[in-house]
Amino acid sequence: NAGVMQNPRHLVRRRGQEARLRCSPMKGHSHVYWYRQLPEEGLKFMVYLQKENIIDESGMPKERFSAEFPKEGPSILRIQQVVRGDSAAYFCASSPELNTEAFFGQGTRLTVV
Amino acid sequence: KQEVTQIPAALSVPEGENLVLNCSFTDSAIYNLQWFRQDPGKGLTSLLLIQSSQREQTSGRLNASLDKSSGRSTLYIAASQPGDSATYLCAVVSDFNKFYFGSGTKLNVKP
Image (tube, rainbow over all chains, first blue to last red; front, side, top):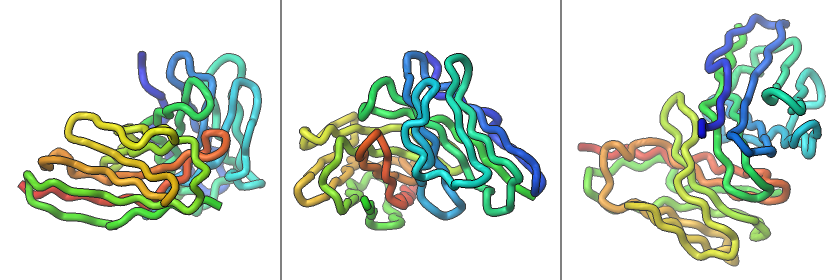
């Protein structure tokens, strides 16, 4: 059973471009979470999704950020018109059920130049 | 709002020493608490999960305790090794599996 897979591992975007981050949860996991780790800061919750539903997006900026977890395929975190302040490590986690152990991916390190 | 604090922020010890990392949280209404390890530039590795009804969990040289009423958890590492050098993160899980992370304790074990 492969772990949580995130790609790409590193992503460089120019200001104003779009960034698309992908997360494939562990097999059998239907709960996906996205977290952001800004430089020298702790991880902060962004969004919690189940298949085809956004359950809690209270940690996600209202503008430019969106997330989806379609019936088929990976979960996608999309950042439009990136700015330098979006540079961070974005981590995805998955769990089989609510409030059970969560497993994290290796993260995608986004650099905006 | 849940606040998680980890003390100390950094710790440097000689190899072989037993050590304790501390985590405190402000809201005792948690589902569980999870300790992670993060190596530089890498992801998070789950070390131990303590359910809210449990008092402690053990895995090898690691032992984690939970006192929900006082809002505290400790991670005990026995006979530390240089390979234990990493940042250790404490996270409490509140509603909807939302993790609240501490800022971590950066551990350096000197050979």
